[in-house]
Image (cartoon, rainbow, N blue to C red; front, top):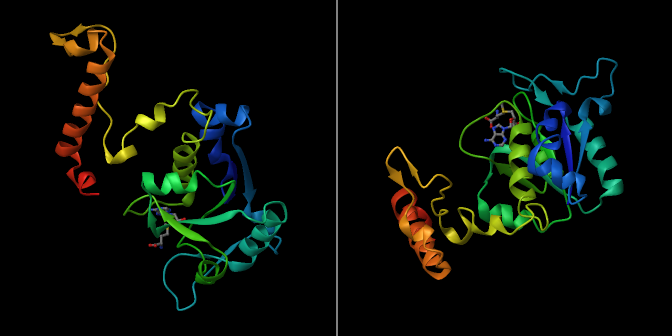
Amino acid sequence: MQFNIITLFPNMFSAISDEGVIARAIKKSIISIKTWQLRDFSDNQYKNVDDKPYGGGAGMVMQVKPIRDCLSEIKQDSPNTKVIYLSPQGRKLNQQLVEELSVLDSITFLCGRYEGIDERVIENDIDMEVSIGDYVISGGELAAMVLIDAIGRRLSGVLGNESSLKDSFVNNLLDHPHYTRPEVVDGQRVPEVLLSGHQAKIDDWRQAQSIEKTKLKRPDLLDD
Ligand SMILES: C[S@@+](CC[C@H](N)C(=O)[O-])C[C@H]1O[C@@H](n2cnc3c(N)ncnc32)[C@H](O)[C@@H]1O
């Protein structure tokens, strides 16, 4: 899976490309991440890519031309890349959307800053807007990293086993509880069944726990 990222802050992506699951996936060549500094597509000596909003008001708006020029360069190599603008106004991210995106070969993330981007880019150049939730953050970079991590861990070979298939939200259930050594901590015991060595009983218990946890914490998932 190839990720292109259009951003004013490419260094932020070292948070996922230098350490952890995504860094390992890059080393294994399962994922590639290429950042595109939008300022390289500015047409002025100050490298500006934003301007004041028509109609007045607070903040600055990212201009059409640098974004369009950057996208057209990206598309020379990746003509079928899906262009996603990270936006609080987009489709809200959930596991279903992660699954849909994880079958693609190439995604280009456009990270907004300031008041956001000129509406004409949204009308003409974007395939999809995605939001990470009903709140506003300062830029699309963190949102893009959330998506890359969520998509990346679903790609074959990234986790080394199929553990992501048992994660919360797969099959509309929350994950079952997990325990590790020691057996007793401050009087709290690991459930007996997990020590039984009887795998079928353990699987049944985990499934029942998943359902109970979902009923308790996220009953809305069971409606789906
Ligand atoms: C300060 S926000 C602009 C918010 C915009 N004025 C609005 O209210 O819809 C700057 C950038 O952060 C990103 N962003 C903010 N909240 C987000 C969210 N919930 N999901 C994804 N991206 C978000 C977008 O790329 C956005 O262009």
